[in-house]
Length: 113
Image 1 (cartoon, one colour):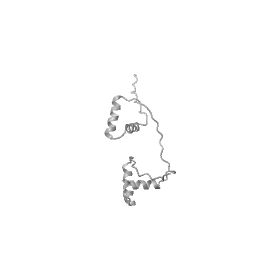
Image 2 (cartoon, helix red, strand yellow):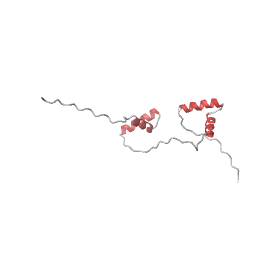
Image 3 (cartoon, one colour):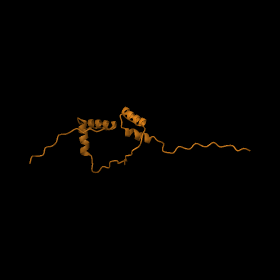
Image 4 (cartoon, helix red, strand yellow):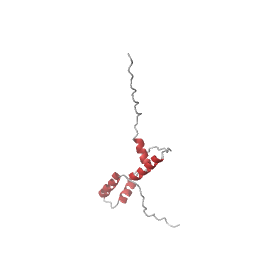
């Protein structure tokens, strides 16, 4: 049987918020590492994956009916803002008022004397 050979490193692409990108650069300089890849490899080597408790936010998929105009607007703004339609939907839902709007007071009638 042929001996196993170690596979070469392969690129992995993922999105990070800008604050984490800044932290990678800060750590790269502080640790004297040459690349962001070296920082990530170091982080992966030292992190306790078995003991971590990642935040879990339960999600549920729903289907709703939207007018053609609303659907078109969502797609257009998603492209303009460079986000997904889902992000915009969640933002719109989060922006809804949490309480029921107060009913307008009915005008009182004067009694005839």
